[in-house]
Length: 301
Image 1 (spheres, rainbow, N blue to C red):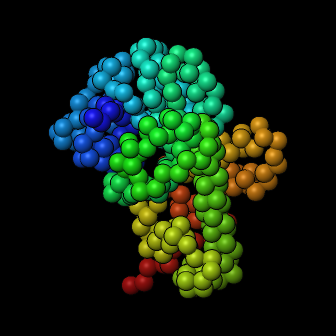
Image 2: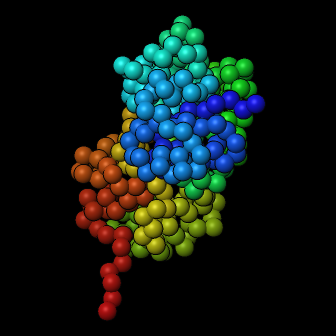
């Protein structure tokens, strides 16, 4: 018999994940963390809605969290009326991108209360979430990960056990460091090219199909060339949050990370100039604009 699953965080990623759980036969209870639109759709498809976190805990054996980061996770789990206060030995799967130090500390605290926390951050996009083809990095004990794996496989094509609790979130930060680093490099290179009279189209002709091409590049340049706003649906503000977590992790580890600091500063500049809600590829426009050039070809009559 399948365990009962509670789900919190029905945003662009979580909605698709929860829909896959329901479609694949998992008894599902949901709670409206922010938007109700996905809740309404899932309830119409057979899910149950809980009025509060205690009711969600009572109806669940496993709870999946897919929220913004550590602050939200800590509030949902340890805050007034949170999951821990329900007094039930839940398995909590944190699919958010959280700070590893928060994750490990929270797991230790929850263990004293009989709850198990594992970290299972995600890679890929809302499209793969809806298709059940996400990549998941899981940190936790062998026993806890084995228990969680069937739940994760409902919305993931690949589940990688990275090590103990916290290691999944560490790996996710490294993953995002690389991808946000690409974004910062692409944006600066495009601006330098524009200053020299090289258009994004020329830039792409050289890079696309070369050894420096990759799936991330193609998605980023779908925005640059085609103005596809949905090519990479990841907010600049969230990129800054993740790079700030990376800086905190590097400091705790005693590691100098000058490149990470430079990438973080690029996203911080974008946020402080009012662009935090835009998606990451828009960084290319922001950096270009700050340097007095445009990456958009002027319209011709």
